[in-house]
Length: 246
Image 1 (cartoon, rainbow, N blue to C red):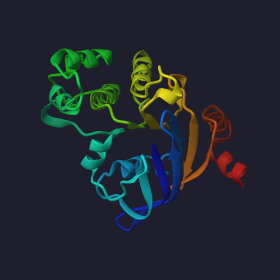
Image 2 (image 1 turned 90 degrees about the vertical axis):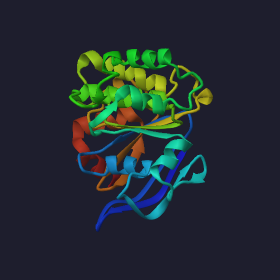
Image 3 (image 1 turned 180 degrees about the vertical axis):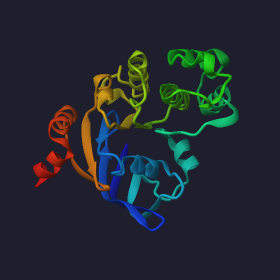
């Protein structure tokens, strides 16, 4: 589904990613661990094609096609979607309106379908509010997931979907992520794949990941079983990853 090879990225004169290698198969979910400021969000934004992230070397392949030079809207049309960690509030644009745009390619996109998606995430009462304006942290996370559910991308990136979500709604968020990633199907029958950034690891209580990567200092340092790596990080910190690799 997605393959990143030798990716080095700059913002202005600052190198933020260096020689990143990552491969995620169709039907699988990968989780990305790492301390604050190590480059996790920068990697997701580079894959998405966000402006100002300049690829110095390396390639990003989506379903075998080189998308390194494509604009963000072109990548979205190909089937790449992202839930941002801190998306902006958008005055004057209702959640209902952006959801209609996200649902343009769906076979069923009437108001009943739109309302049904919003209800799954307890956002039916938010449809006529400006996007993210006055939303709590958890409501913003659910708003991002709702837009992805409307878009139905093939490759789904989630930047800390468990941060700021209270205990009442984390189970709801987990169910929505599993629906997006088609977890109810056998792996061979899934048409989607995912990459989830998490700092706390709480999302793994609700979403079963297949592979984990650890990012340190702008590069992917190691990979392994998600729960084993999370346990090592919780007990030894990221210093333990450095010692292990050494």
